[in-house]
Length: 113
Length: 116
Image (cartoon, each protein chain N blue to C red):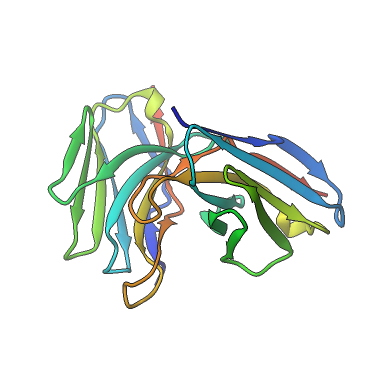
């Protein structure tokens, strides 16, 4: 069966510090991968998605970036965090880019102080 | 107009009550629809897909009205464990023409609290 994991689960970072969140999927090949952010009191916002290794599409221009160095690995990064980057970050995968359901990782809760 | 719109609630209902959530979407080319459940400080999880003919899974019934671009979720005989936020999710083409890739758009969710 397929599983998805992301880490760290919780982190507190000062403004201006770097960020790296990692996500891996097991039990499937060539998944479509996604990074979402859920800010307090707001809906899920799609940040990046990837249909294959090295292929990244950005939905929202900001100080975050994403990379997919391996088929089942998706990384979310920032060189300098802002206060507004605080939120609940969710990695997700789906098999079929057009019809499949989305499966989420456990989430990473980021607080920027 | 918001792409996927839900009543944020909260809905506070007693155990055993029947509660209904509504959702409207703006993209008429949307192809598939889902309800997700999100517990406090947890990731969303698929509750059920929504089919054109309507579908039922135990105490949960989902319905779709494509003409009105409207989705509903009915929960019968509410349990304490049903307390969560319910997210309406719509899958549709990113381009207005309907071509190209599809993406999932999430509503902000409706919060349900089932009270003893």
